[in-house]
Image (cartoon, rainbow, N blue to C red; front, side):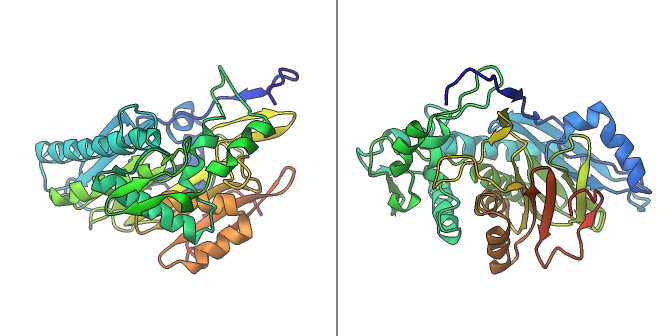
Length: 382
């Protein structure tokens, strides 16, 4: 479908920003209207792409030192925020620097876009030879295969050969033809990956692994681990909407995770409390274009090579960000009911699924463990 007529309506993806994590210490949000006013400001719309974390004001009289640093890596803005009343800024800065360095190391191993990365070399070796890989890459691949099995193929890291056919860049959009998609589908099958003793083998030339749906989560987990190893007890790491938080007495009971409304750029669907844990969101409003009234987005169904339908936003809460990241994609592809069934079958995993009921009407499903905690602030989803 390379047709130039009619021209597609191009929608620039919301760009991640230097302040994905909103830190509102010393500010008490008394009601939803106050937050909504802030949401409507242009600044806030630019800052929050999918989910955000609000830290409500602390009643402690002891000074709470806040430190935040943001850098561009892994194709998005990554923010690390530390809340600590005891450590000096120098100590915190050193810990944050080490956390960023750890994430950079992971990017150099797991990015398919960096030509000399481990993953890029592995993809070029497809059909030629097994390749010994680092412990980091091997761990991500193992977990990706595991989640592929759990989701019965809804999450499939060998989708890379199909994702390369699509381009959601507003300046140069590309929608592949059915023939182009179908030709490459035989190369999409995570079960073909051979993993043995830190060696990986892709048996067919042209196979391509894309870890975009899991590597950021792994990097966020690694960053939190580094912070903890350096004495940090209260922090929040956000990589383009994949986030993990650890809380101490400073912020316990004061964090809320807000989920953006998938069809209202200046509004929210709802929120839930979170002290320590991981959250990831997948949505059809992140990278997309519209042609003939049909929305084409970046979350592809591995079975068809086409954008997955029915779901518009999936938010997953889990113990670690790697699982939350991959499961958000898997549930999105599975669809509302099958996706909810998967969530309910897993320990320590909760989720919110917003889906398309009719052409312009949204509904939502919430897992049993989150149902009493979720506060819906926009009843247009029902």
